[in-house]
Length: 342
Image (cartoon, rainbow, N blue to C red):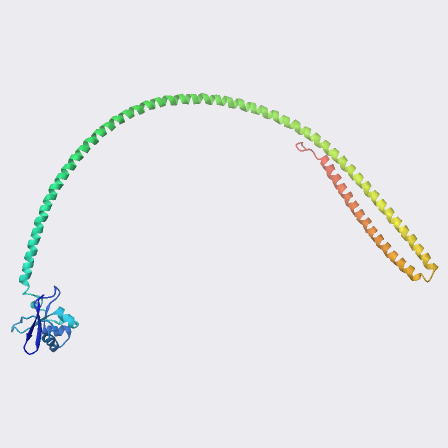
């Protein structure tokens, strides 16, 4: 981009530019700039005159009076509101001044591309020769590897033939051994069957002898059990008889003691009554003593009566228990022993 200042008489200060800023940039006339920015042409021209908006030094158009500014420079000063308002012309997008320079750049780029093409072609030829040599080496290595594989395959085929022959021999030997094993197994099976039959016969005889022995032991145990039941019944009856006699003796003794106490109480009461009759002075004292003695005697009598009733109740329970036990022993003695048919 080329930009330079040009001062003219009358306080004019314009800045000139001859190239577009980029491929998206374009030239606008003063009228198009006014339309796209929605500004007055007087404002645009004042910006050009003051050097704020650069302008192309050459005038174009039929009368060569149309001045041009760049769209990029105008956008720096004011927003572009309507870009379609500009009148599209080839001059607006064509940069005739820069065409020779662009041609020179294109020629230089073309020469550089031709040099790069020649260099790439040389590299491609060199790489092709290198690839051809590598392919030759790989082919030789593959051929050598293939020959080795064929040799190893032949050796493996020979080993497989030997293994097959060995396997056939082993199959024949194994078949003979298997036949021998089958024959031996049949013989052992017959022997085991005979031994099993003999063992079962012996087991049955032992079982019968054991059953007879068990029956004899059971009969002996039943006799012993019956004898034990008889002895137990006798012992229980004797024990209950002794306990009943002991309880009766205790009751008689307690009754005698109560009778003696009653007789003693009666005699004491009689003596007290006689003492009361002997003197009126001792009536109150004698009456109190008699009343106290009567209360004590009544308490003792009540206590002894309760004890006698408790002893009678216990004796009745003992008799009932004895009768129940005697009935149970009788029922056990009458029931058949275990294992004996009823």
